[in-house]
Length: 184
Image (cartoon, rainbow, N blue to C red):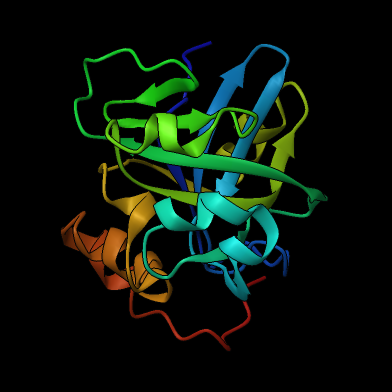
């Protein structure tokens, strides 16, 4: 099994689960035991500082919590974009390139010089062993390369069509697929 850690799962129009309609998920872990990711384009209106205090000062605009997925919405997963992707930073586990997950028990001031920003997700998206591969094979997800800025867009609602358009060809046409068309 080839790991998809660090790649994007982009919902296809055929995916009718309302938890994932037109979502872009960054896989932060993909192993034999399953997969874990966070939805990058579902911002809430709750400021990070309201929930996690000093971490709010590192949050990128919009500096709000994001709905990471339907699993354990009371938990938090934090992503950071590191200034130097090759530098090892205590408290950050590299996912891909300059993007990593953050240990929220670390003092945020210790990371201030090492990161360009963070994004905090309430909950996550999880798949049991083989489940994500089955969903990809059924046509529910496109597996696409992530760019470092995808997780930190100022306008996250634009992420789904933007990722599809940058693929070019027929894939870019999917970005214009009407949301109210039912597929069987």
